[in-house]
Length: 230
Image (cartoon, rainbow, N blue to C red; front, side, top):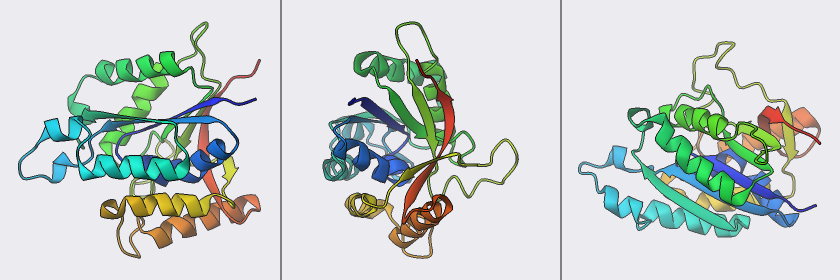
């Protein structure tokens, strides 16, 4: 049975780093893949902020997101314009409402988003907002809620029992890892040279290691937040 899949990320490129191969796998299987990106992802670097440009989807990063999503087979892309690396400065309810509206419209069976313990503050805000928006209400239910890892955020957090990413769900990425890497090349401005964890080489090494953990050539790893059946 084909299903609706919603990937919710803080910044453009997080979605591909976290679950690009799984997104491509869903699309190949005929599932409808939708992406919501909540922060513009650039203005923390700007000397002078031009929020209107980012909100209108005119930035080079927004264009890169659309290009990457075509490669992965994404059906729809929604770009919001919350302030980059400052999402803790806005009311959580504002973020929750945007997610709730999209969940109500798309009725996704599976939602992928950030791990709670990431170093990046926007990732943590998005995680909490998604968990809130995807609470199991009557007649509106997300069957699978999964949390992904993002290189240069998840593993850079100081580890503690509460913050550790301990994957218990693996998706075989052997046939779609190449598409993930191709999509990341569309985000060239966001990638870094080896041995940075957000380099193409490091992303592939991580996928190979996650694959070896599960007995495959490559995999993406997740933590299961909630699974509802029946």
